[in-house]
Amino acid sequence: ATIAAIVPAAGVGSRMQHSVPKQYISLSGKTILQHTLTKLAQLHELVAIHVAVSVDDQYFADLPFIDKRIKRVDGGNERATSVLNGLLSLADNPPKWVLVHDAARPLVTIDDMNALLSYCLTHGEGGILATQVKDTIKRGHTHSEQTIPRDALWQALTPQLFNYRELLQSLQDALAANAVITDEASAMEWANKPVKLVAGRSDNIKITTPEDLDLAEFLLQQQES
Ligand code: C5P
Image: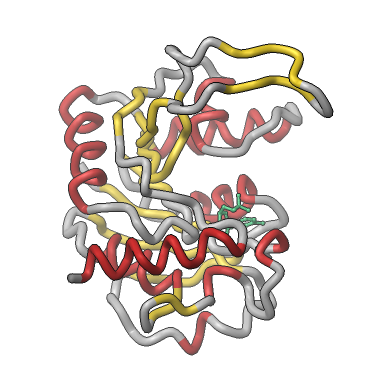
């Protein structure tokens, strides 16, 4: 089965309050996007790695060459539209499966990606890396209104792996219906398609705020040593 990857990397990283978009911040000698692409490039099964970057991105062209499967495509205004553009960029030669992975998650391990690929390909079912919620979760605005039982709560991570045609259709339909789509699984759920939860490491964090940078750098150094 053919598998292609899409990397949404078109965010501006407003919560990072940094001079460059967060995927271009350097940690341990390489930009966050380089770390992420280096991880994906280790998956030899991937036939293409399409990176959705902003149309006015000035930085992508300066990245050192990593792998000949990597191609720049235009991103959109939201993560979901960046992913949609990535899917459409594969339409001429559609793969059976598509693996979507956030540029902002450079800490993903090859073992976790292989666990996801192995489950989905063996069972012919889409799925995502996720981690069971460890904290007590409150619902509320200024005051806590309710504690949500956490035994059936998971935090969604990436990568997320789905049948290419099903994801393209579900995402287009969900966006047309104005559904709230914050990951690929939300579009699949909206279309009543199965989403397997594959337990992954909780240190596969999405680098979002300045506090995440020191932690991510420490974890990257641990992985490299
Ligand atoms: O903003 P957030 O941290 O949720 O972004 C998750 C991923 O989606 C990041 O890798 C970011 O670059 C990407 N993104 C995108 N296009 C957007 C917004 C976010 O590709 N318009």
